[in-house]
Amino acid sequence: MSRFAMPLLRWYKKAGRDLPWRKTTVGGVPPDPYAIWVSEILLQQTQVSTVLPYYHRFLSNFPTVQSLAAAEIDDVLKCWQGLGYYARARNLLLAARRIVDRFGGTVPLTLSELLTLPGIGRSSAGAILNIAFSQRHPILDGNVKRILVRVFCITKDPKERQVTEKLWRLSESLLPKTRADHFTQAIMDLGATICTPAAPKCDCCPVSRLCKGYQKGLQNKLPIRPVRKKTPHYDYVCAIIRNGEKVLIKKRQETGLLGGLWEFPGGRVSNLCSDASPSRGSKVGMGFIGKSLNEIIEKEVGQSVALTPLGLEIKHAFTHFKMTIHLFAGSVRKSKTQLPLKWVPIDQLKEHPFSSAHQKIILKLQNVRQSRRDLWCG
Image (cartoon, rainbow, N blue to C red):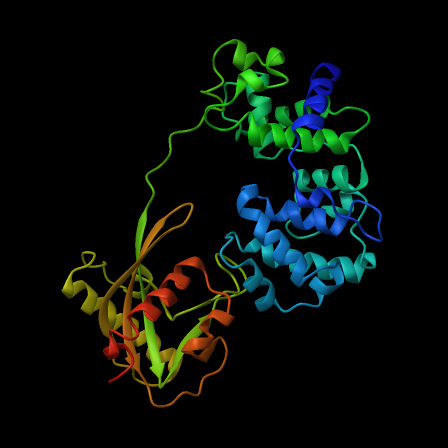
């Protein structure tokens, strides 16, 4: 333990990152458990450089757990817009409300209580308790997992259950009896700046002399990564339906992928067409898809909508699949709808939280609005 912890802590004292959540106070006393909790959720599967502006924006809009608990989901998602993995934002809101209702507005002090909150797993809970309350709990985020695999030269897939359990034991074994808060932040920083996924800087590493992977020259091959499957591609269609200077948008269900965000009506081609999907991008195919889309739109709007392909495509990539969105346009004279549908003036679309893919659609529409009058007139 000491052989690993002491050089790491000395390195951290000199080279630790200057991060805003390490300077938080509540009532003038550091640290602020709420700000640390928010930062930990933001940092899940996201790099620090990406998180920084979102962290400042989020705490500016919701400075306390009480203000977050009282917020509307649309406001929280709008603040989160563009960061991805939106379940984190929904869980933050649900957890804040639970903290207010069950814990008197105070972030819980125990591991068992923290684990009852939506969106908080064992590693996040351990980090919050270590950093905010100086408790001693192991963590196992991506950085720590990579460090342990290299230091102990583990040549099996770290996602295997038995390997994961071993990594948890190793993580706990390295924790010093004191200064767990500094140790936790130090090992996070080591993974982010030195023991990086590619081209680790072993010559600068404070614990390289203890690293079996480095000693065996395997640091660039660890962790073992399973063969990646080919990323699938899907076709989607969206309808830009006008009523004067307003367009129709639809709110997604609160759960699932992109839950609670707004979008233009439509869907995935295979879900719209009962028959085998025609070849992608063909005129016959788009006509067939447009007819199926029209049927969906007619049910949602309550009237027939003649949709025309715009010849515009939006390409977007998620973590596990890629998509191409084909845009159609149409107009109606009646505009009465009810949630989850909503008519919104074109200039107010940005006030609603959209996914990154549908933000691209909005930008595309703005760019063609003047040059493509057929989009708005007809």
